[in-house]
Amino acid sequence: MKELIVHCFKAFFRGFGQIMLQANAITGILFLAAIYYDSTEMALAASLSNIVAILTAKLLNFDRQNIENGLYGFNACLIGVALMFYFEPSIWVYVLMLLSSVVSTIIMNWAIKKELPAYTFPFVIFTWISLFILSIPDLAIRSVPEHFVDIEELDDFLIQGHAFGQVLFQGSFVAGVVFFLGVFISRPIQALYGFVAVIVSVYISHSSHASNALINEGVFSFNAVLCGIAMGEDKVRAGMYVLISVIISTYFDIFMIKYGWTTLTFPFVFAMWVMYPIKRLDKWIVLKLEELGVNQFINKMFYSETEQGVENKE
Image (cartoon, rainbow, N blue to C red; front, side, top):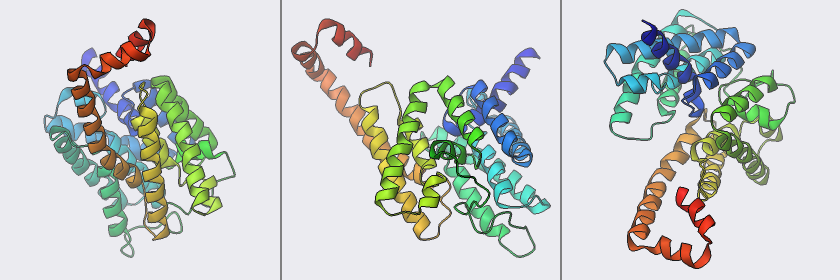
């Protein structure tokens, strides 16, 4: 019984943590607390969606370790938060939220088996579908004027706080700081890469003459945060991966908003899809160089024995 409780505890809170790619229950607790701080309705909806996803995975006998690591819950959490952000609570909103949570879990399991980089794509596609269906008159009442980029209630807080906060549709600076701390206690290097990614995305946004108001609200930066976290590693090449992915996601974000799309986290997902073959090719090249002994030759020529030990660890 104790083992089952621990399993469910980890699965539930890691589901929140995995929104920013952290399989850490403490991170998940902080994320849920930050959502609750901004919106009780969003926190309850995210929790319900997460539970539905976990139950779906258990009933369909999906991999126990994947369930415990929160891999089936994070897309459902995001769906719950998103629908509460866009619409006033209603029976149709909850029906679509729960159905989307179930189907997104099934799709995520298929992607894991096929070793495909799904990331938050199940959340994106089912939120888009839900937004389309709920736009039918009398099915739901909008809680914001148009879509994600129209956030009237945000105050003029720091861009960094907005960027981390808007990953989970939260507008307060407090929530954004808690999200940053949640990632930092799990993987400090990823939190710092996410921080730097915001700076890069802001520079790109200003250079592209994007709306200053949207830049300050972090609208063009939250996908960059996810890129920084996803690509951030304790390796020299990680910085280049982060830079390329942030450039791709930010320009794609600007493009989508310009043409009236509800972006969600699709620019991040798109950037990860572009980076996927690049990283695989890079890994293949590194392995080939190691087989040929090129790395050892370079180490002997340019590094001391101490530096070689550090390089080998990477």
